[in-house]
Every structure is written in C-alpha cells, then in structure tokens.
Amino acid sequence: MNNFKGKILLVDDRVENLELLFSILTKAGYEVRRAINGSSALMGVKSVHPDLILLDINMPDMNGYEVCRQLKKDSQHQDIPVIFISALDDGLDKMKAFSAGGVDYITKPFEMMEVLSRIENHMQIKAARTKLKDLNIELEKRVAERTLELTAATQALEQENIERRKAQAMLEHMAWHDPLTDLPNRTWLMQQLQDSIAKAKQETNYQFAVLFLDCDRFKVINDSLGHMVGDRLLVEIAHRLMNSLPSNATLARFGGDEFIVILKAIERVDDAQQLAQKLQSALASPFNIELHEMFVSASIGIVLGNFEVRHPEDLVRNADIAMYRAKALGKARYYVFNTDLYNNAQKRLQLETDLRRAIERKEFFLQYQPIVSLKSGEIEGFEALVRWNHPKRGLISPIDFVPVAEETGLIVPLGYWILEEACRQFQDLKTDLETTATSEVSQKSLSLKISVNLSAKQFSQPGLIDTIDEIFEKTDFDSKNLNLEITESVLMDDPQSNNIILKALKDRHIQLTIDDFGTGYSSLSYLHRFSVDALKIDRSFICRLAPSGDGLRIVEAMTSMAQSLGIMVVAEGVETSEQILQLQQLGCDYAQGYWFAKPLDSEAAKQLLLSCQTFNI
Image (tube, rainbow, N blue to C red; front, side, top):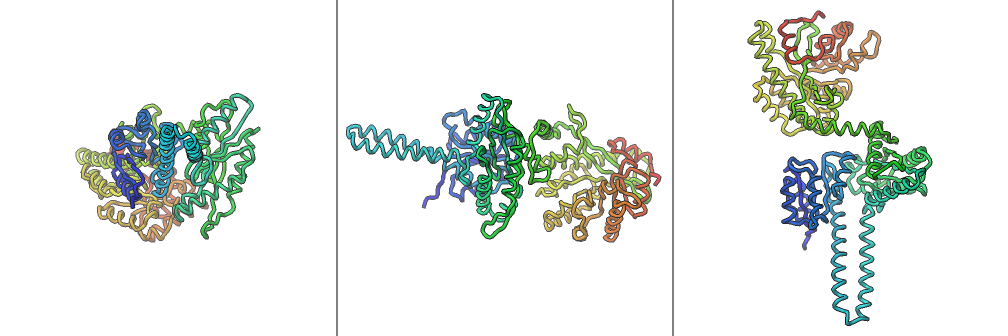
C-alpha cells in the first residue's frame, strides 16, 4: 500500500532540527528533502518542486522572510505553501511572517502532533486547489470532445458544473475556516478587519473593538493529557465563546489557543470591557472531556478601532501586545491597549536586536564587587558583574537587558562570554600581583575566588562541562578559584540530571553557591541532596534587617539552617554598619555591598588588593 502523502522541503540551519523533522515526516509518509540555509533552499525548490516548505526564520546567510519573498516572486513556485518555524512567539514576528507570504507559523519547541496536523491541513488545501485545476482542464477537454453530441454534452456539462461548484464551495470554506473548530480563520479575520476600517473611514463616528484571547493554561493541559484532548478542549472553548457573543460580534480562531473577537458598532470602550468580562465568565466553569475535569481562563487584550487605523495588522498587533500585558499582570484578566504599550514593545524589540550584536561589537564589560569575610575583614573574592555600554543609549542596567537575554536564549553566549572574560581578567590580575605586589598579597591572590552567575539556560546546555573546560584551558585558569552562582530553581527542574552536572563541577574543585536564596524554594531537602558550598541571602531580606523585624528572623533562620548543614552564608546588598553588626551576631560568614565598595573595574579591583585593605568591621 502506497502511503506517500507529498513532498516537503525542510529548511533549517540546525542539523538536529532537520534530523528530527526528517524522521517524523518520513515516517508519516512524506518524501522529505533538506536544506541547511536559504541559498540551498532556493536551489532545492527548483529541482524538487515540493508540495510544502517548512522554513526556519533565523538563518545566518539569508533569513526565512527573504527566502519566502524570493519564492513568491517566481511564478513557478509562488503557489507552494510556506510554514515558518521560529523560537520566538511574538506578535510582531508573526505579522512579518504572514506579510512575507507564509501560510502558517509554528513556534519552537514545537509539538510534532501540531506540526503534522498543520502540514496535513495545508496539504489538503493544496490538493483541493489542484483537484479544482485538474477538474477545469478535464471539463474543457470534455466540452471540446462532445461538441457534436449536444444533448449528452449538456447533461455531462451540468454534472461537471455541479461538481465544480461543490469543489469551489469546499475550497472556499477551507480557505476561510479553521478545520478544527470550523470557526472563521485568520484570513477571514483580516478581511473583516479591513472592511471595518473602511467603514470607519466612511463614517468618522463609527467605532469597533478587537479582543485578542489567549487561553492561560492550555499548554499544560495539552502537554499532560495529549493533543486529542487538547483539540476537543479547543472545540468546547470555541463553542462557549460563540454562545456568549452579542449579535454585533464575530469570533475567529487566530491560531493555536488564540481567538479574536470583532465587536462592531460600539459607543465606548466599556462595551468591549463588558464583553471581555462575559467571555471570561463563560470559561469559568470546568470543562469535562474524557473523564477529565479541567479549568481554563483567558487573558484578553483589547484595542479600539476607528477612522485613524490604517492596517488590520496594526489592530492585531496592538491587541496581542495588550493581551501579553494582561498575562504579565497575573492572567485571567483583560487589558486595554495604549500607545505606551506599543512604544515599550518597540523599545524591547530594538533592545533585543541590539543585544544580538552587542557581544560581537564588544559592548559588554565586567565590573567586580568584593566579597568580604565578616570575621577578618579581608577580601575573599569578587563577584563578576556584567555591564552593557550601548553606543547610543549609554549604560543599560542589567535589570533591563538580562531578562530579555533570558527570554531569547542570548543569555547562553553572553554567559559564556562573562565566564571566559572573568577567568581571563582574573589570570591577568594574578600575574600583575605576582610581579608587583608584596609576597603577602601575592600569596593571598592564590586563594581568591571569582564568582560568576550561571543561568538556568546555561545549566541545561548539553555541552556545559565541555565548554567550561575549554574556557579553563584557553585562559589557563585554575578551576579551584572559581565560584559558580546558580538559582534554586535550576536545581529543582531535573534533580537527577542536575546532580550529575554538579558532581562534574565539584570534581573540578569549583565552588557552588545558591544565589538569591530565600526567593525560591528555600528547602532543606534539596540543600541536603545537592552538594553546595554556600548560600547567598538575597538583598531584599538584608535591607529589612532590624532588631524586631521579620527580616532579622528570616535571615537568622537561613543562617542557622546553613550552619547545621556546614554551608557558608554570604549576605548581599549590605549598606550599613548596623547590618554588618547584625550579620556578625547571626554568624554570617561573608558579605558584599556598597558598604564595602561599589562594583569596580579590573584595575580598581587590583589597586584595592595592592592596598592590602582590611575592612574595619
């Protein structure tokens, strides 16, 4: 039995993605060809002429948007459907994908059942179009052959016309409707928004609203109960939303677990807000599917449309931005778009773009904050802190750029750069001290620790240990001088695998510190299970130290817990002599903060060591 379903061209610069998709799609019955960049993809299309293209957006020589635009310029290949795949899930990126000519957008890490479902849908649409084209050709052929047999030809022609109308109706329905929920789809939605914009320009008092809904807990349900249950849940969600709409509102499925409502002819934004509340109430009661009871809420973004709106894409983008704001505020709520949200989104996108180039342009630099013994007053080490000197905006706070680096995955190359640069500068410092300092200072430098933060995404990288070893070899760094700071959540994600990594780090005599302790799990069980050397108490607790305050009791409990396990305690954010005294009384081992010194460049840190300064504590 022939299971061949069609030809697919995979385009991705990551070999692992190509191999994964090739394996799955081949087993599903597709003939699959692969391309590792945009140029080879364009050549591959000419030789293979695939039925569908899965196209990665971010590729080094030519991004997916440009590849798609070039394909659409070629009349021989412009009808090939293109599905974009990307690691980003941002409204602006989605709009760019569809503007370039894509028919769909899949976010990494993707679920293969979803990928196969979407490919099947677009294959069916293409097959329907091909069938219609072949039907037209066959119809013309039959008419020509049966011209002399008028009566028979008329009957045959009528039958063919009926089939043609059915095929056209089926194709039109598929083109305008979502195959799962049978709701109008994104294409229909954009046309309706265009019509509403045109009406508002004709009648300047006319207003409408767009409500962008995203189901808050759908991914958890989909991952735990499977896609079949997830699909049935989406159908039930669509049904409830439809039954809650007034007569002047229409509902469309935008994609995944996202829905959009167009509310026409409204007087004020309150009308949209009341509808948002009604829709959220409709989802409040539990869904029962295959003996599973589940709850789903929705975050809703609202944007008003009037004669000032120019493009449908602007409305969808702004509603999407407002929806993400609602989700950030705690989910299960709505938020009305304002221009500040768009400006902030634009700034964030620009920040992300600049961040991608900042490492290669050497815009980052390190500063060092001393870590001081609360017993001797001597400097025991330094924490390496990254700073960004933007060429136009000047110094950008880590509070602003580190979360963006975490979300985009850029924290991985940035984190490795920080580690390598800290090791290199530390080795230079030791060399300088050995040649210029007293023997006491030179000897002291041998035991100094340099502390570097290790992000969750770095910790989960398969080549973490090998990369650290390469950095040690490249910088001639002694591993016993390194202290890696990790957060509590890193250890809790996959305890069994994490224990293996921690053991490998300990085998290299690397010291391990739990950073921001007290803000996460703060559990004795994991401290007992994992071999860590120190806890760093978060500054939010240190600033609340007072003889009768809750901060003192919390820090006392943390310190006592660490001492019982033989773990050192470091307090960060120390700014007053009173805090020093309290921490000493509690038995805290080390501290850092502005009371000792603000973050210093490498030269200032060296001078501090050369001065043989012992802090009077």
